[in-house]
Image (cartoon, rainbow, N blue to C red; front, side, top):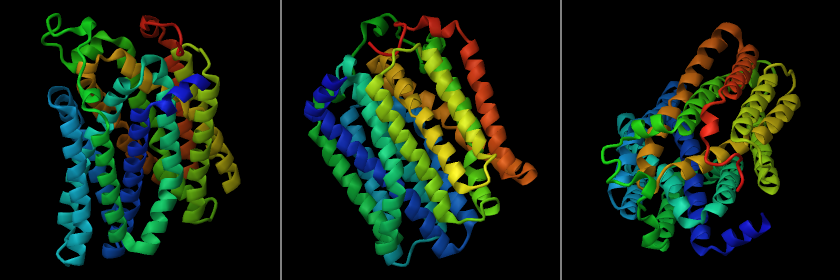
Length: 411
């Protein structure tokens, strides 16, 4: 394991990839904080804040399959550079129009929607690019470092975004966001062009499968299909926590936004620790039991949050939940990258993302409705129970997991 990390650190292309990805993920955190604050301060409407954030989710979900197709058909390097340049221009246009006093709410929705529609290209592109940057034996550690990066960004991003908004205002923060995109484009240019090229896999050559589409591919790969379906329902059962937790903080803990931030930070710290422990130990467990353990563990700890009556108890549960949740994205991403041939990776990734990303808004909507009827604590507890039930269903499905090319996660 130590040798794998040494190889990754010595891999100049991977270091550039990792650093650029960190900047652009921070930029996305800044966008969320800045837009929410900007809309709330300029309109005074929480409904409009929710509307802007919903536009982001819907736009990303709508364009994912189409963008994945483009990644597999057109030059990836040029697409990713144009995509991030476009996002940079769009986010920079918001403060410019604000300072010119011409920005309206419909214009803001159009700009945010356009930028969000472009963003899946970067998200999918990073997943497609990684297996071309590192050898297969280093793929899981590389995904572990990517998950570590995400945990760090999730932990630090909101705080940094809040500081930037406090000192520079929302428009100034969006200009910083645009600068992050400029730096990310620079990192894409620094990666050799050959790393972006799609490689034809002999197992799925064009001569042997000329008309295969992503849905056919997923039907023929039961492991990928079940990972996608499980992720969809995992997102649904997780979703109620997001609208319910702020209500619980306010009405049960009688606390404010800072307490809510500390609870989410506890999850981020736990996720960071869980990633480090997983990558240090790399237990050679069957994938079926890894995914089941993550889902059941998260369901138990997140559900217990609904039974707490003090913020510190909720923080402890979220910390433990973060530890158990961390391996999921590592193992799911690694096996998706291993099982999908390079020349189809963008299309299949886009298809999977378009389906799985629908789970979160559905879960959030269900959670919002249940909170109004049963209360925040009961909603969180029921979401946890539903997650545990999902884990039990996953472990009962033996046949698809038997089709894995190797018996365990680590090679």
